[in-house]
Length: 203
Picture 1 (cartoon, one colour):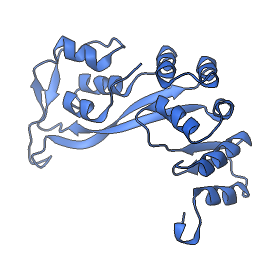
Picture 2: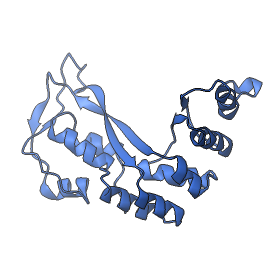
Picture 3: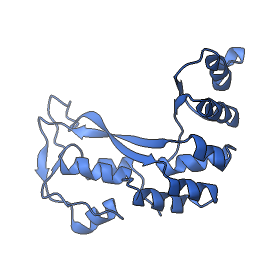
């Protein structure tokens, strides 16, 4: 992509389509023209990967609709959406056991799901290995939304994002915060990190 010579995502995608690829990666869908080109590529049998800046997986559907992609084309082309956030991982050399997360806080974190509360969680300390930060490396929180017939019906009917989130959860989606809760339970990260990175699940 070279905006200085008027070569944008849509122009690059148009040129790429002439090469008959099987898989296309579009760096980011940020305008209607790029969205339309990505949809056209998907409609003609190409597997298209791209990114959108949204708060969670379900919000990506709303974003595509806001960009002007008709609901029937969203249903015809969208296979799934993966939302992700990075959190710092605790340093394995110095992390120490911490007081358990209280029940009310844990329930609020994973709501509306029910996830077993861990008996032991860890906190950062700091050592030479992690440069006194208490953290070493990062891990991803993920939220996977798979398009289903029921979700497609909601999108086609113009349902609001809360209803789409609710149906996605019924279809098996687990929120970013639930993904974070699982990593807290295994001692990979902390409650503070998850709360900082992952938005609450709103339905």
